[in-house]
Length: 223
Image (cartoon, rainbow, N blue to C red; front, side, top):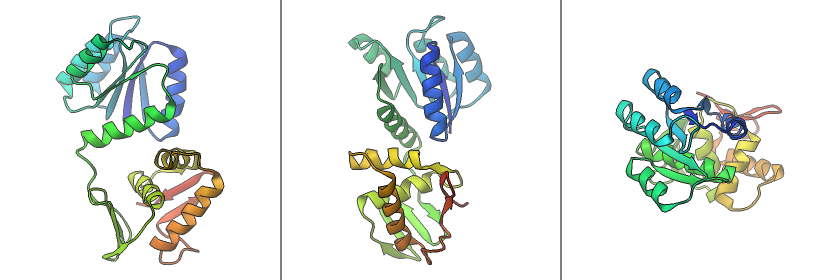
């Protein structure tokens, strides 16, 4: 997924860039209205993060340009302003969400995931080997028979399948499970959830063929 971040505060750019790239997103950054609009006319992005108040121009102008060249691209405004006018103006221009600074990283990541899912109209069935996960009915089947997972096991599998073919770090998994559990998830807990999940979806849990371990880094569902 490609994200365009339009922000002129270098500290925020660096922090957000590291956060998003750590989640597997490809991030392009621009600091002003004109350069951002020029990039939008040349390239395509899956989501835009726009600061409303820029040193050169405004996020509103970038939003308008984005709606002309790619109307379906979801937009989230980032701003230090929490006045009602800015909130309403941004949403009426077609932004999907609006989050005030300072924001919590996990909250922003959660809103990004929601915006991406909404813009894509929800996921279709996700598959890996004999496993099929249907997000619409929240069901998982193995060779056509339903597999019963706990809420956290389901969330873990969903996140892994959504990132099929890419490395998923333990930190990324911790954030994904934390969102679902509402409490901190330790490395030991991740090990337990992964073992239980593999016991349910793998033919041979001791030699997994669906969720592979990338030693020292995390996990990966093979294409």
